[in-house]
Length: 459
Length: 99
Image (cartoon, rainbow over all chains, first blue to last red; front, side, top):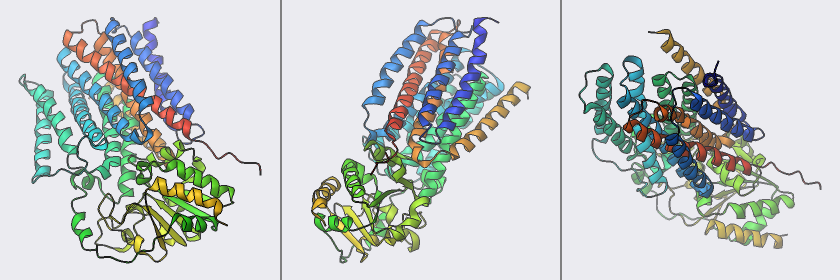
C-alpha cells in the first residue's frame, strides 16, 4: 500500500464524519461539534483526493482553493443575519455551478458511455438549472429582481416544453451519435430553465424554493458520484438531497400548499380580488405605549409572536430588552415561532438568537399553540398572515387551511403594526377588528422602545 | 447492469433514507444552520473538480473549467461552514439566575 492508496480510507472517514455532522446538528448542545465534524470530513475528502495518483499537477488546484477560500470567508463574515437566505442562495449557486462545470469538463475530456453518461447528463442539467435558479432566488431576495411573481399566458406550457427539449437532447447525447451542438444547446436550455422556473415564484414562497434548490444541489452532487463512480459523492449528495427535500415539505405543509402549487401556482395574483371586498372601515381599538406597558406589567404570561416585519424594523434587540425587563418582574415570556416566519426555514430562530434571546424561550407552533389560552397577552410583532384566524374558517380566503398560531385565544392580543394596510400577501386580517385586540400603530422598533421606557413607571 | 452500478444505487438509496431519518430529528430551531451545513456538504463536488483539474491528460479546456469549479465549490464550502458556525455561536441557553 502506497500513500496514494490512502485516499480510500480518507474517503471512508469523510463519509462517516459527514453523516455524524448532520446527526449532531439535531440539538443545539452538540451542533457545533457537528460543524467541526463536517469541516474535518470535507478536509479528509480534499486531502484524500489530492493523494490520488490520478492527480498529478497541483498549481491550478491550489489557485482554485486559495481563491475560493479568499472569497468565501469574507462572504460568510460580512453578510448580516437578515441576509442569510440570500447568502444561502448565492452559495447554492456556486456549488451547483461547480457541479455543472465538472460535468461539462468531463464530457469534453473523455466522452463516457452508457450509465456514467446518463449520470453526467443529469448532473449537468441539475447543476446548470440550480445555478441560474439560485442566482434568480438571490436576486429576488436581495430585491434586485422584482419580488412579485412574473407571469405570462402559457408560462407553464413554455417551461415544460423547454425542459422537455432539454431532456430529449440529454437523452440523445447519452445514447450517442448526437451532433456537436447538442451538448451546448442542452446546457443553454438548462440554464434558461432555471431562470424561467423562478420568475413566477413570489417572495413569500422563497423559503420553500431555497430548500428545494438545496435538494437539487445535493442531487447534482450524487449524480456526479454516479458519473465518476465515487461513493463519497453519492453519500454526501444523497444526504443533502434528502435534507432539502424534507425542509421543503415542511415549508409546504406550513403554508398548506402543494409542491406543484408553489412551483406553478404564482401565489400573490389570486389574492388581490379576495382582499378588495373587505376594505370598508371597521372600528379598531388602538392603544398607546403607556397602555401597553401597564397591561404587560400586570400580566403573568406573555407570548411574543415575531414575524419578518420585526426583523425588517430591526426591533429584535428592543424585544430582548423588553423580555429581560418583564422576566425580571416575574412575567413568563415565551416566543411562538411559525415555521414560515422569516425568509428561510428556521430563519427567525437565528435572528432572535442573534439578539441574545435564549433558545429555550423559542417554541415551535405545535408546541406552544395550546398555551395561548392561558396567556394574558399575545404580542404580535411584524407577523400577519400566520396569525390570521381566517385561515381556520373562511373557505374563501387564499390562506384557508394554513396552520396558524392561535393568538386570538389569548386574553389580550396586541399587534404592533405600521398601519391597517394588508400585509405581504395582500390579505386583510380580521384579527385586527377583534374586540380583544389592541392595535399598537407605529414602527416596531420605536414602539417597543417606548414600551420599554414606560414599563418602569407602570405599577 | 454491472455490479458496480448496482452497488452505487444501493449506497445512494441507503444514504438517502439515512438522510431522511437524520434530518427529521433536527429541531426546527436549527433548520437554518442545517441548510447552510448541508449546503457546505453539497460542495463535495470539489472532489470531482480536483480530479478534473489535476488529471495528467487534462486539456486546456478541462483545466480552465476545472479551476473555476474548484474555486466555486471552495467558496461554497468555506462560506457554508463559517456561516453555520457563526450562527450556532449565537444560540445560547438561558443562564439560570440565582435569585
